Image 1 (cartoon, rainbow, N blue to C red):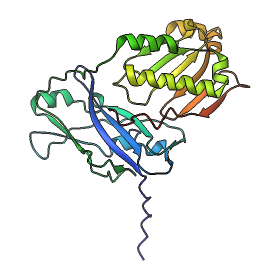
Image 2 (image 1 turned 135 degrees about the vertical axis):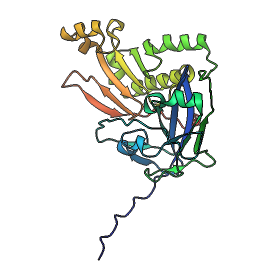
Image 3 (image 1 turned 120 degrees about the horizontal axis):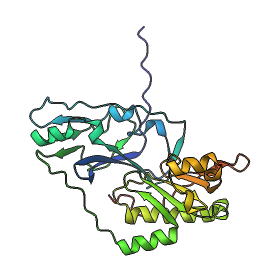
Image 4 (image 1 turned 60 degrees about the horizontal axis):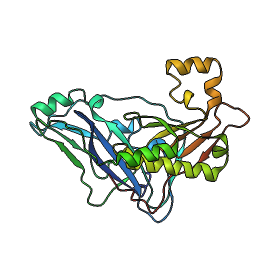
Length: 285
């Protein structure tokens, strides 16, 4: 008797939407949203997400618009992700982006000469998700597209006020990373920590509209040390044990986890905290 085929896992009630974005001149990204459309919480493993390798190279097709059989060669990327699950409440979404320029090395040339069309099956056979009702599954970049960056209306005065009240020290436009000064007492008290994360989320939504809701923030007790550990000055502080003392927490909105006091063995822990608030419009692009 022939071997039985493994039973296909049922699809998760996470509706997938894909948007084309231009964060900078002649830079193209697709932003992917997965929204829980059921009336119950849904748990998804990070390994199943569409932007995580090798999933990212399985579902998206790109073709030149000079004919029906002109696929654009894609580069694949490797990545390692720990075993972690994400719990999404009804209406809650998880989002991330995929940069197209490094993924499609000939992208700009193909756009200039032919135009490029992005396509995915709906629902994608290689993924466990469903499609958002009436959401397109084809995106087109026309021939000779100038690649002008997306323009957003941002209230700069309001953003400066948010930065001040938040204790924001640094942010990186294309890194989706923030550095915030706070106290140990705030991170120790979960209610205060949650309130601070809501503030960060409000800032990202109002002042960083090109970002998805996949961002990270590091918390420091002193702005002098705020920044990446790879920075030359911070490397010196790290060697002296100073950077570790000041870096009291890290949060990833992607995995909804706050890592507290990561450099103090007896105090370090991780707490699952989501910034989702049902009254927010999670479908805002």
